[in-house]
Amino acid sequence: MPLVLDASVAMCWAMRDERDPLATAAAARAISDDVLVPAPWWFELRNSLVVAERRSRIAVAETAMFLANLDAFAITIDRTPDNNSVLRLARERRLTVYDAAYLELAIREGAVLATLDTALMRAARAEGVSLIGGED
Image (tube, rainbow, N blue to C red; front, side, top):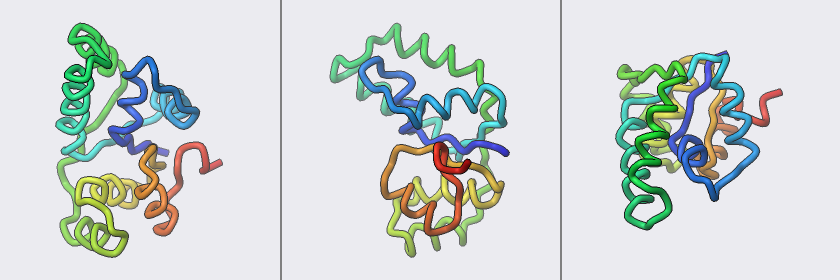
């Protein structure tokens, strides 16, 4: 089953001072499963890394190393969201459109969602989407 990877989980991998069992489980799964992300993920992840650099939580060299290591995963960027579904999810589940894009992708692909965002977790459960760490 494919894995939809939220930027919150990928950021947990990047930060030495952030460890979470769900992020660890997602990393283990990402080694063997197809990993899908919505198009905004690319920007969201890099923005979070730059913000972490500004706050002296990660060095520029560490960002470069992390992004190079991330290439080891076969991450497919999805550029075909269903407009109506994303907007419905954002409205009904009170999500940002960005978070609704993760959820829409997981629903459309029948994928497990890896997120540390509590609002997105709650919405995923309400939509019947499996979550990493809770699907087995």
